[in-house]
Image (cartoon, rainbow, N blue to C red):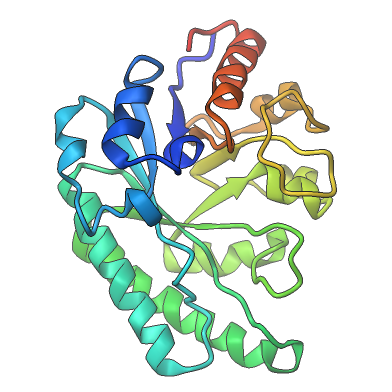
Length: 249
């Protein structure tokens, strides 16, 4: 029987205010990952979080943050924002902060962007220690501009003591989910499905990922987050994943 809890991301309620999202998820799980963007920006207001006995993880904002920015002012501003999000995450008792690795808008300067990313990782090490929240860098999908699409990047995280979020849907799009599972080294997992070509974030079991194999290969300590676009698909995923493990949602 699977004894690990299944978190649900507020991504499935991102069109509604945070208090509505938390109230909606309260009857479904005791573990929530807050996508701290848009209406769920915990820097603007995290007071709804104290009204529920959830355990939390937080997904850092990604719409306006790029830790691989070429412009140092933009990169530094992104790190400052993440420092503020880490502080807010600590206040609500979150155990993990998921961070996107950033992107390079032009292939011709990708090496310089990658160097910016490495500087940002060094900065995040200090922020992780300061706030006591584990920073977990997430692998990206099949977008050419993005960094960290293959397991070859994992040693950069391990060498710094940073965590890794394995997004199984993103790895499926890049055709390297098996390689990620073989490499291991991740402490946090995003669970959703797709048909292998588009980052659909559909219900687990509705696409092409073999979740029976995936679940058997996940580290026992890794926290698992259902990250679907729709609430009904989150419900469907919980039922499906629980049936595979003979556990309870």
